[in-house]
Image 1 (cartoon, rainbow, N blue to C red):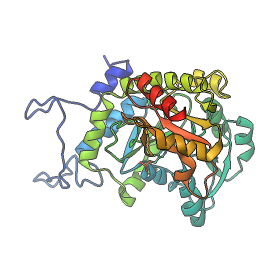
Image 2 (image 1 turned 45 degrees about the horizontal axis):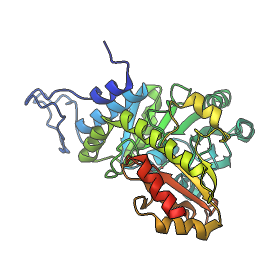
Image 3 (image 1 turned 135 degrees about the horizontal axis):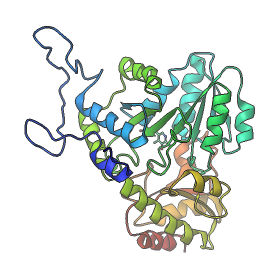
Image 4 (image 1 turned 180 degrees about the vertical axis):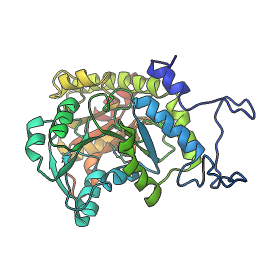
Length: 372
Ligand SMILES: *Cc1c(COP(=O)(O)O)cnc(C)c1O
């Protein structure tokens, strides 16, 4: 009987007791080459860029977690994104969220633009804007929800419907909400992760992954994986497998902690606005409640007094760490506009928080002390 609950899947997927030793924890196979049988027939593995046991175990686990058809693991979230985009051809058109991870925006605009890919950036939280941006050459809708860093919510079922009627594919960067949101179930064709973040969850791996609803849909992505070579190391795959075992529990804790922090910040006189989908005044509140099982661990907030006041808060925190990235055990705070640089459209009074796994009251106390 296959397990039905996500916690059980996360613990057991891709895991087998090692027959030669009885080891319960899976081994790491760093080997790059695999010996052929004497009759010259193809062994299960040939060469580690093409396929390798530890990567295979990770991909199998990701497929089980998403109830997908197939997966491909990459050396970074950016590598996974580039592989998906490189399945398109020059002249093809992409519609993407205008509040997208800034690296993805840069990839589309500065690297794939000159190669011939055309992208229209729209606020995908408005289904009409999304629909109006579609053209005959549109092959891909690229959404991120909750978005980074404005925490906008895109209705994924509506986006999937628009993609279907345009004969285009819907790709969802689900880095902010693994487990909590299941894009393939909502009609997405591909789900993409910077596994660097929550999926690994310990701040010690750079990785990426693509999971497709239909196994055939991952084939072109796998070509980019194998022939363009952005593959993860065996050790990184093994660390990711270890991280995934606790992922459902970590996501629940991140969301519970972020809810406490969001409530406290929204009552603070120096905070003019908190962007967190669980808050009733969030414009995407209802869609988020319908498509996410919990609101996630990311939030952003606006500080009264603008850029200097926001930077001062970041300078004063003691527990919250001044660093980019997200999804690890430590609460990280950052002034997003500074990180994104000159082309950033992020408001400069905005701070982004990746709420960690500390006790939330300690995080609140640190933020309140920094704001006061
Ligand atoms: C970090 C991030 C990426 C890029 O991942 P890397 O592993 O840094 O290449 C893509 N999308 C989102 C939402 C991210 O947060």
